[in-house]
Length: 166
Image (tube, rainbow, N blue to C red; front, side, top):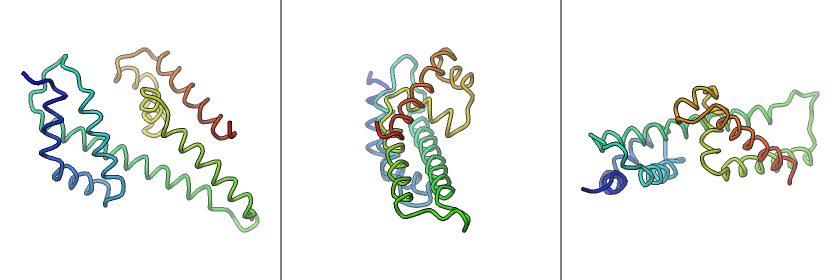
């Protein structure tokens, strides 16, 4: 009997064009769709065999839809933050040098966020981007609230270091 990961991976290979189209519809275009499909592949490869999956196709599509939705939310939030960052009132004129420094700072933080180790990255996204409480995350992941707090604290420290250029 093949493992859940093997079944999902084989199904992903067969269903990839349809999954990609579904993800593109959710995201409103090609932007990020390939990244989402790659994330689906990584998640599918990590599924354990503790429970059998009754409907692997439905599981795979739900996984893709959830990851596409998360990606879309994160992209929207990032764009909103960038827009807020660059919308100054006339009296708040910012020099070109300050703009470049702010953009460099933002890029360092975004790069650091993208390189957070798992599960810190997932926990941080659930908390800060999707707005789940630490208790909700702990229940969802089956870990203690203290564990979630430690991961969020670690993520914030790493992002602060990146912001400061360390």
